[in-house]
Image 1 (spheres, helix red, strand yellow):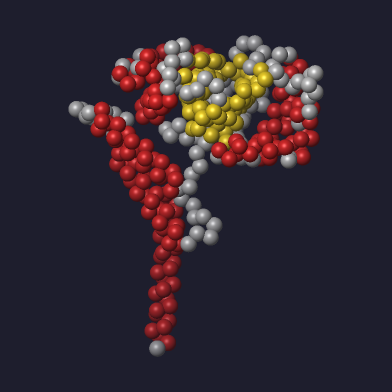
Image 2 (cartoon, one colour):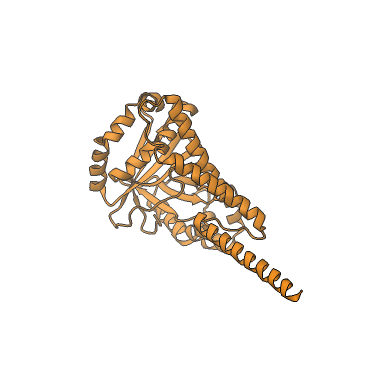
Length: 327
């Protein structure tokens, strides 16, 4: 009897060990972390959802960017929708949080205001933002002139954006370090105006990238305005399914792509590119203009500029990073 009990217990222990090893292997293969206190049953259910979504994305993703010979518009759109749904399901099941971008535009009028803003950002704000998971922070000057100055904050969640002001209002260290800027008097304001644009990252580029750290680096900030929300989504679809891939191939190095959720001149999308210098920018834009895939894509009726962009609705700016910018 004792021998049978021993064997039963040993077998159970072996199964448990094997089960634990299998769960660890599955965790590593799917990059899915177990939540605190999550049971094996609940964890396995999430693993199954992730694997199903990943498999669906794998099966449909191989040729999703290319229209198949003889494929109708309806069939092509259906395939794209299935692929995007599979990506969303995989991200949701894995518990990933999408990136949101806050782009601040500071209008300043004097060198003293610029110096004060630089001191505030480098000495107080960036450190506080980083401590809240907002990083890397980009600070950019216009290629010519004094103003405006752009500050890019990548938020880990929408809640981070919503709660930021109140959180920092209760941060005594931040309030002390930034006191001169925060408490600037009305007759000597720290800046003229500040505009804020809040964006959601594109599905095809869910995270910010830093393409270059060259001391000569420059950045290009572009905004595309659309005549309606429907056409705005069409332009986003164009980037998600094909255009971002072309950008990468020809050397138009993305920093971020964002759909504007709140701000001016809506509906619009905004993106940033990074280059080692202006010469690289000019050369690679020329390469993009002659790319056969781009020529084919841009001539598709549903993606032509006249169909999905507002007349004179493209803003193009070249920017240079501040010495303390993290991008």
